[in-house]
Image 1: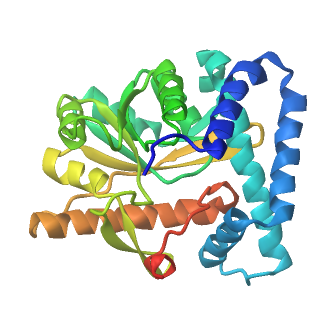
Image 2: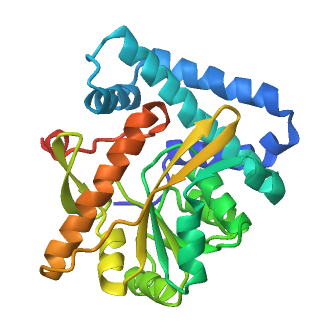
Length: 302
């Protein structure tokens, strides 16, 4: 099987390259309106991604599939998703002071206090709002961090995304295709009192931990809870959302590691606690949850 990029891959890569080159040079309001227009057009077409988003949102909210309320929520969700892309194209040119000033944070002290005490922090995030902007805020307030990125196709797009995130001050490890020592690297960072940020509600490997999530079973990545159990780092779930033209971050209290039980039992308990916090954050801001893929195990079965 050839690894040569498909026509679609090349078009997507070219679109991202143009976005990072051109969008920062154009006025913000017209480009934001253009991205909303594109979002509405995709939503009206009702393709596979939109239908999956609606299925996921129906489970989260209890709204009836096909209802007017669910359709309006999925429209807001697509606008939120496209807003993310509009903003990441502008973010490299945005002053750090503006990023920090326009970010409204609940619970920042959970990061500051642990780092000041020399204790590592693992921030676990669902795919919500603008997580790259949240990372820029974290760097802007003095906490550069390490993260892991899914290996996108084509390779040129993955490398462009890595350069974008490194330009914001992040250390980026590839999920696959690297040296195979990601967990060891992350553990070293937090043992030295550093910060790690990881997406944590969708497992992209085959080693995820089963949790109950909005009344059904899914798998979350093992990395965040395992780091907390093995290194003693503070696992802090964080939910990210939009606040008008600004951004919101809620850094929740630490998920405690049980004092008793096997390592596997402790990891499972921490994973379930993390999932419970994600449920609360997503339920509060469902329009900003960008889950356009299958997530629950019953949806993944043939």
